[in-house]
Structure formats: C-alpha cells, structure tokens
Amino acid sequence: MANHGLITSHALDRLDETERQLWSAQRRPLIEEYCWWPDHYFDPQQYPRIAPYQLVIDGLPFHYPPRSVVQYHWCMTETDDGPRVTPAPEVPNQHWSFMRDGIAHYVSAICDDLRAGRSEDAARRMGILLHVFQDTHELHALEGPWGADFFVLDRLIEMAPSPQHLTPTMLISNHPCDRVDIGDYRPALQGASTEEATFRLYGAYVASALANRLHHVPLVMALTAGDTAAADQLLVEINDRLARLSADLLHTVTALATGRFDDQQFESLRCHRLSLSTAVQRPWFAQGHYHMTGILEDTCLDRQRRRQPMALLQTDGSTRRFEHGWGSGAHQHMALAFDVPAGVYDHVSMQVGLHEPMGRAGRVAWEARLDGRVVAEQALQSSAPTLDVRIPIERGGELRFVWRDHGAADPDDNNLVWGEPRLCKR
Image (cartoon, rainbow, N blue to C red; front, side, top):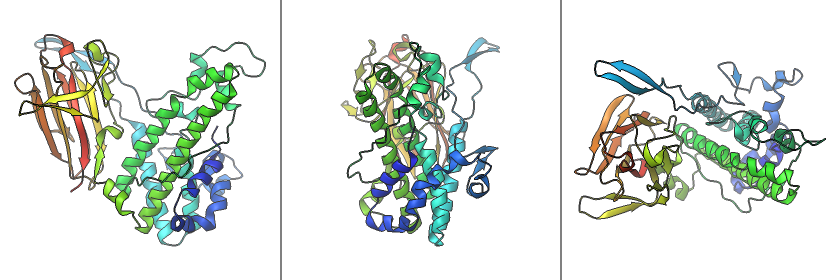
C-alpha cells in the first residue's frame, strides 16, 4: 500500500525553490498528517478536525470515487421496417463527474487559500487531494476508471495453500515497498486555469491508475514465486508514477495560485492531444478485426489483427501517416465522448477517414455532435475517404463522435483512422 508521506515528500522535493518556499512552513504536517487525512475521516476522534476540509459529494467522501461502467450491451427495437439493434441505455460516467467536481473544488479552494495567506488551510486541502491522486497505487488502482473492486484478484487468481497469505490481496498488502526514485524529474504544468487543470489532471490521474493496474498480476506472480526483487521493482515503478503525478499536481496548483508560469510550459498547453484525454464514454468492441477491441490508441489493425501505421489518403493523392490518434472498426452504433471544459479551447481538429489502403472498400457513416447537435458529418467511402475536421469548441460541452457501418460488403473494410485529434487554443 502507498506510503503517502513518502510520496508527498518526494513530490515536494521536485518543486523549484520558489514553490518549495511557499509550502515550507507546512511541509512537515502535510507529509506527516494531512496527506493521510482521508484514511482517518471515519475515526470519531479525528473526524471533527478533518470534516471541515473533507468534501462530500452525493453522500460520498471525496476519497474513493464510484467506478465508471464498461458498457457493451445491446437491445432489439421493433420498428416498421423490422427489428433493429440499438445500444442499451447509456449509464452516466459517475467516476468522471465525481472526480471532476472534487478536483475543481480543491484546486479552486487551495488557490484561494494560498492567495489569502491561509497556508495551513491550503496544506490541509492539498493533503486530501494528494491522497486521492495517490490512491492510484496497488490494489486501489483496480477500482475507479473502468475498474472492478479492491478484491477482484481474489476471484481471478487461485493461490496455493499458505499459512500466511490466503489471497492475492493479502499477499500484496503484506509486501510494502518504500523506495522512490524520480531523479531530477521536472513537474509538468497541467493547466493555466481551474477548468483546464481539472480536465488535464483527471486524464493524468486515470493514466496513472490504468498503468499501475497492469502491474498487479505480475506482482502476484513474482511474490508467489518468492522473487521479491522483481516484486519490489514493480512497486518502485508504481511509487515513481505516484510521485511524478503528485509533483505535477503540486506544481500546477501552485502555479495557478501565484500566476507564475514557465513560458515554455505555458506554451505547451496551446494544443492538447485528445487521445491523451479520458473519454467519458468509449466503444469496447466492433465488427471484424476490431472485435473485442473497439478503438486503439496510436495504431491500426490489419485483417490478421497485427498493428499497422495509421495512414489516410490526402486530396492530392498522397498518403499521410499519423503518429498519434486512434484506429477503430465500425458496428451498427459506436460512440466516443469527451466532456470538454468551457472557455479553454477554441476548436478541435483532426483528419478522420478510411485507412489507406486497408479501408478502401469501407463504408462508414460518421458524425460529430456537440451537446447533441450535429456539427460535422460525412459518409466515408471510396469517393470521399478522408474528412478534415475543425469544430469550434470554445463554449465546451459534450463532444461526441458517433459512427456506424454504412453498408460495407465486408466489416473488415471498415478500418478507420483518427489522425492527430487535438484540442487547440487560439
């Protein structure tokens, strides 16, 4: 389990001298007390001290968010033209809404505290926020975004009888690792406003959880084999990821509070790769070779389900390859949605179309919607394989991409490329 104090200490050390000075008077209580507070909220003795700072959302403390649901079911709808397959009613992404509200609350409140000279209040709130972000460590990483529960490994891995460790959860929880090594890591700026910071920090938080989640089965395998060195290396990688995430959080909030931004980092915020953001809804499977995958980041699949470069035909007849974006198939209905903050980005841009050459015979109906209103659409086919997309997005809202098979002879021909999707400022 995470040593919150150790992680917080290393994160504070990665701030520059001016930022460290701002937190210096509260460094010790932040490390020794405040970053542990969410775990003590239910202690009747400590509750009165913690409660004024602990945000509660819909009856739940801002600590363990509800998980987002993996949705892949369908319904049959009877129409005048016969039965039609439709997606099951969509379940709202409560993980995103819970974390969005919590992050925005704490970022705003901490900035207000720091500007008003309330360093103790700022440190207490920062401790709670750091704890939540650091709860993407081992075991808790299994929860949250498209996750399961804390004990899911116990239902997936059968362990040999042991007098000490009856389950994988017990095995992991009894093997702490207090090593952190992030060297001279320079924290990243994750926003120049509360809205932008909330959006980008959430993406970084989810990325941490998903990456750390992948370490769990190898961790159990290493521990059951008695390979403590391999287990420790996996745990160090988790700790390092938490420390970097915590440093980014501290750096970003401090910069927002003081208005002190590094020019190069500030400029780096001008465009944000949409593929780095966390979708509030996404497809999990499609027809053809994208069956059981739906959509993949930064790659495409061929008919043998091998990774291939993303490429689209251009108007001059040339082929353009893309380093970043998505590859996807199609089905009777597919959707990918993002909750874009208002007042942050001017537009979203990308090229979307049928892969060149693997999608030449494809037929896909594609559209983009902003808060339910269609703002771009195209029937992607051999005569119009590629669409240049530029959608004004300054007012924010739900940006939803919807696409479906439009009569392709072979589902494998519906090989889509989403080239360099980016949210851009003016």
